[in-house]
Length: 72
Image (cartoon, rainbow, N blue to C red; front, side, top):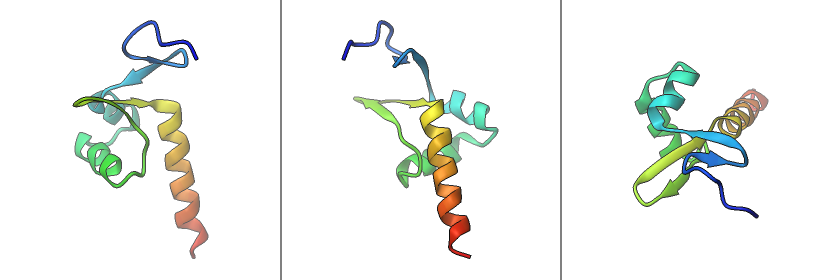
């Protein structure tokens, strides 16, 4: 696998910061932090830097919602 050409690139997609992801999802940055800590959404860590792939996060949220809805 070839290394990304830019630090914020993953498979040709731009990786988002916590604040950018929160804006994209229209939630508070603390919500993103809680979802990350709870492992509801995936992230990429390099040292203390955390970045998110929007497509992977959306898929994880959809999966979590399907699990939640299936328990009724």
